Length: 213
Image (cartoon, rainbow, N blue to C red; front, side):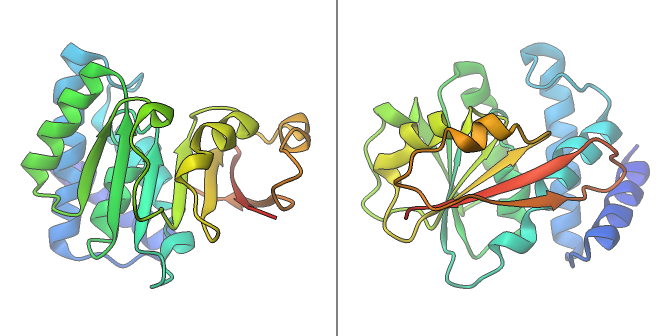
């Protein structure tokens, strides 16, 4: 199974034009194996096959890597991270950047603590609870990520206290619903929508980028 995961991952990275070290490849594989193992008991993902997890979780998360490459982006919050998506795959891709993974559900927090420890991710910390109930970080995140978390207006409202003047929200979406874009409050600039092309996937994927006006 490890060879199959490695081949899928390497092919996907090639399609994404993302470079990775052998150590990073081993970490992504270890994360998938850990997620698949814990999923049998904790029901962390609707996907049970490890190779499908590699495609629909790891490579899907990594397809926004280009939007985080800027060296000025140093602190990234992943809100409603679930079992660590997209935060953990991206934290492996960018070991020099710091990630805050925000999650409120206990089973997922237990898994996240174990995954961070097992993978040795020193650039990841947990925000344990609902984002609107957590202490606001002294250093505001440069980017606030979400993946299948909430409607755009709700996500902005919930996370507004975490945003500094230069914070940009990056929301991963499937189909884009025009009504969702229209409901974004006018205190924000017009959202920018980019098509994503995660490897081996045919379903539509988009990234919505939002700044304050």
